[in-house]
Length: 157
Image (tube, one colour):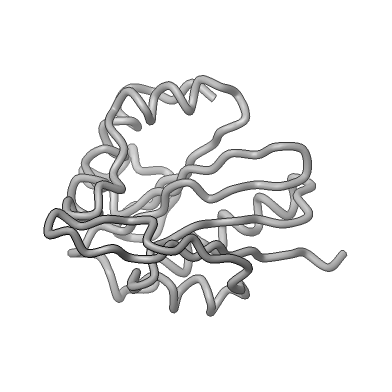
């Protein structure tokens, strides 16, 4: 999927606000662009009013980016800008991601997150469950190590 340049701008703006710099989780513009050029990656945006079409809004509240291989899809990036959190937009965007994965023939979706990620409650509310652990995967600038948790959601069809 080759996104319009302004959609990449929107993704980068949200990522710059939503991802704490100390974990090094944010991607740079080239990484986002290159991934979306591969053909098996997709993305979705959400506006502050919950609309999928962000072109009518001057701001983007959040985005997801994912990669599909065969019948599995991995949620690579998911973010809601801090000023738009606690409004249900994360639930709405994640539900849309899950729905399109399922209707696209995926049998399951995966994600990986750091152990202390507050979005863990959101993922659990949508049925994701822990399936693995990468001990001390993330490192903070102060040297602290944080585990990465692998999660999956399977579709029982």
